Length: 168
Image 1 (spheres, rainbow, N blue to C red):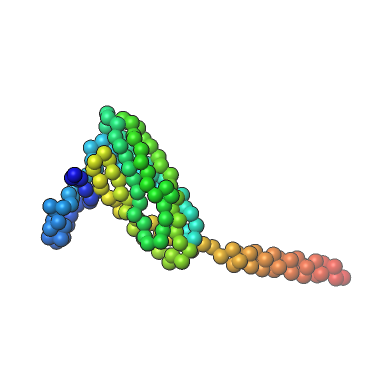
Image 2: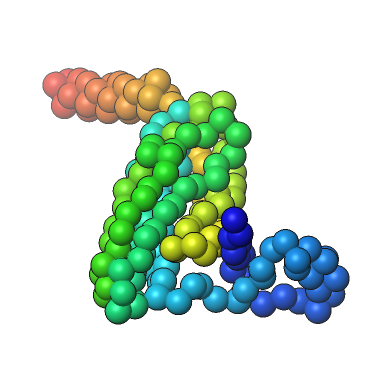
């Protein structure tokens, strides 16, 4: 059995060609997507550590034939996707959206991460890197403390003004 594995890149800088082309017998480096496939977008809101975050993947079949589509996200260690894999037949000229959730562990440090989006279009496999941002959840106790402090200050100002008005 043989498979074509492709990795989509915009261009290859001349100083990196020696590093890119050495495994050419094993990996097919291409500058475009397989025929009929259009990556219409990925919407991942800023991820919050310790929460499940919903992502939307949009793909379009711009061909006149139906195609088999598979997708899975290669995530950093400890992260989970649900479902782990998406498998669908996409009819000709059809735009499809797929929703999946990404669970980021609570101990994940805030910052930028790369998710590898692995697509299979019929027998062609290709990978697209997608940057995501992780932020820490807002501390609810800190928010409540600020709200109560603001309410206490407002009440104290009200009482002081009321006492001044009552004095003759």
